[in-house]
Length: 487
Image (cartoon, rainbow, N blue to C red; front, top):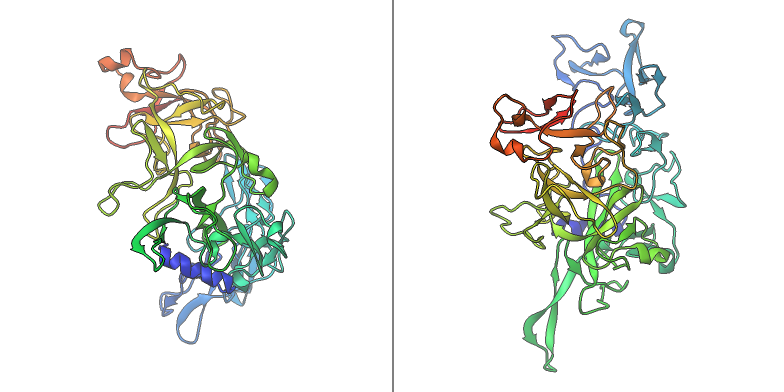
């Protein structure tokens, strides 16, 4: 989203009007797993469709089924009704909203193209209104998550408010004064909201405009900055008057969640906390938790599990290109800027919020060990900094802080996303779960070191081969890839 569009959306938010979002049914689908309308009925309609007088096959339930149900034909097509989708994984009957199996267990699904969050249901119809939680179960919507005024109540003392319109309500904390809101929020008629949503509160710094006023004083102007940069803290007045000259805030994301598109971000200037670089932090923006909030130019990377994380330096994770040849702020040469939240620069803002982590390589004897981040141990994980590939082809990777609880080799691990912390030990990964197979800590190996005539480097390479009884298996068909799993 461009900066101008962000500003427009911020103004819209204050007026309680909805931002432009995709149509709930993904641009033409009837929802509930039904086929698109087909021009003419000469080829016959689907079993859950009827041929309208205008000779078009249409949903027999007339679009009344939400994301957790499907349209079924009854009495040989004489009538139609919405029937709830029931799922079972093995012998376990899944709960409502859990529509898939992952690792042999029931799980809900977040929004995908043409479908809603399986817990939330279609916003056009009453009821439901939960969201798919990280543990695969339906949970009550929390702060900044979409809600229904006639659905599941908001959690944690928040209420459902039409911040972006009646059909795009979100949970907010009620307030009558600024003191009721968390740090970095402003009290509005629809509760506490991130300051970046308001006019005059965009992430910016001051600079000398190169002119003087009538009194001979240099005129200062504002320059907008992107996520990852330092930004000026401002007052809560309509113009957003700066309260400092040197920026102490950090421009980062305020995350909203909508049932048809998932996380939706706004740039906002976060006040500095008391936790230093590599210090432990908590995902708690309240006024009383300032000591565990990260300082200037730092982001609380949630890699310790739950709400706990480590304060790492912010950077611009956008890959260099012709348009943006040198994204700033950048990391030192021996570090990588990882795309912490796996975002895409869809608005062409020229920035993605990332954090700096040390480079490493699981096969290199001199580079496979990682130093602690403060008091937090770290391991080398062979994953791409841009977040697009879970495992690299050559063993290169980044040093990832360990989660508070890790698993032993061949034991179940609880986090397959390395950007949320390492669940396993050195030389191991927690691979993605399968339909019926849960992830376990898996030893890495070099597939090119398993033949009868291995390369000379295999003699000194760490993690080159598997222990007795296991075979180094290829995990990707990419040409030249040599990272394998011991199975």
